[in-house]
Length: 123
Image 1 (tube, rainbow, N blue to C red):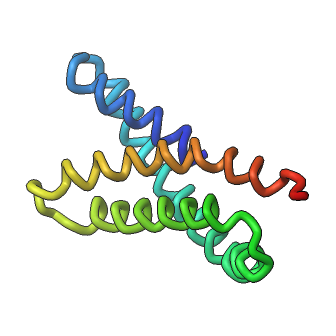
Image 2 (tube, rainbow, N blue to C red; image 1 turned 180 degrees about the vertical axis):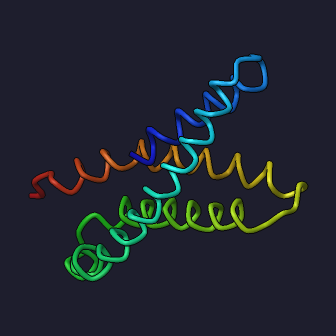
């Protein structure tokens, strides 16, 4: 849901600058609201993953590299989302936005890899 709403927002935000049609502005605003709501739910789920999944897998020495990558990307997403929402600096905002977009795409690509690596049979 986060990737989908973020991707639709990205397209709508790009289109609103080149199209006079008001629908892109409305779609961008709606996607940003849904994206923020989905992010709040995801924060709860990420918090639940720490004791249930992350700590247990770390102690079992399973999938540490891709798990660390997932934690790092999610940490970047959380920090940049906070910055985008709460920092008013127009100098920092574009950088924060591009880092957030890159981390969002990266976590979406890394997630299936993390799952596949975790399900493989080790000798």
